[in-house]
Image (cartoon, rainbow, N blue to C red; front, side):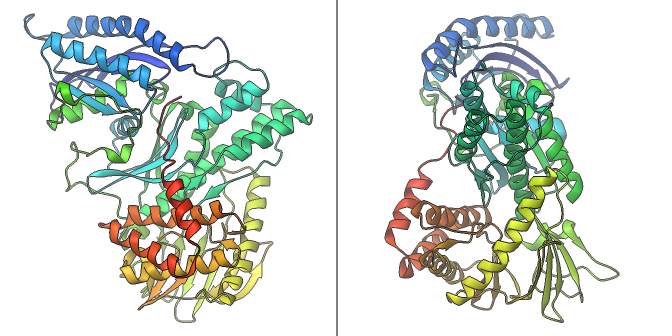
Length: 567
């Protein structure tokens, strides 16, 4: 980034009317914000737009004053080099107010215009303040929750909410109990005096769902469970899910860096869980200071500076806002192709999480090990591999970040399901490891060692087509794998094996079958350099055995992408 770049940023996707000035020379970020506060309930788009209309001129003028006061160039020069604005995603009426203000200011000052993706800005401010190279990012905000990682010039979506956003989910509960907006801080305060009660825990691969949890939480409250207990359990469950999928993303990508973004990231319990998880697996964690977590123009200005230096500016006629602007639609022009991407398709990601006792580093990933015994740290278990004896021992170790009652429940449930569904899948003609022993008290399995390597290290269209056939056989038998990523498929020549059924379950719902396919499809998007032919291959393989209505529902699932507003 050029040391003398100065950018004025404007943010207004939903709640916060905000303007900021970023000075690359001093790394100083000045922010002026005025947040919309509804009298009751959640956000009202018309009222929010009216707030933007009134507040944006005020916050922009204050930011301009700061820019002029700190500008050391000639008075005839503009005090900033460019105007950056949040182009989306967000509420259309709010975005249009911001876009109009940014265009007017750009023309008045005769400086370029930069359109910033709000969600990518959450990631980039974390990367900027942490100094991390290529982290995985968990964005947890009002209408959104997703995991992003950089690969080949784009930020890839590794996992996301399949219904409501995390902040909105919490707000729905607080409105139900009669609390005013914002609900998150009130839940956090009440949780300090609460005790744990069971709530649904819904993780599907690296995707997750909050709607069932909210319904159960409301019912618990209506049944007389103290609101403090429900709040405590909401945090333990929702944040436990977000932390688990973050660990899955670190495991899949091989990254050892995690950054947190979004307003919900201000919650101390969420930050504590993520820090504990990263510490337990030897990764680094960073959460920006609170003013950069909630919606703010500082992150818009900082990313705007990076884009400005890369020459990524907009002509006026190209500057329309986009309420549905997905982060994976953004060409990452400010990072060079030579910068380190997450290495989803290679073995290098496992190296940090591999332990050897006086043995050389194996040459290739989880398969092809040269050591007599290798220990691999996955997302939820330690796996001792013994290729010479043909045996694998898998232990689901306790997670420090999770409440002990929830952790014990999940470890037992998943060990039981993995044992049962691994054997059931074999009976349905799907190649899986032979189960040798189960110990539920220790959450331990002993299984046959299968395959030479993970599918992610040997992607071909025929192998992927084979996985499509395997998933169709499972669904025809009435259950799902639950986490069919390219790390949970082993390959040996042309033969493919499904492993790790711990997130599987019995179901007769088409939606669940489509979600199973979606999880594998998304892992292909994150793994392959050219995912399109592989995505076609898995559908073709599924179509040979499975029901067409599942593939039709998959199209619906894919069309539900979040990031459609920050409401």
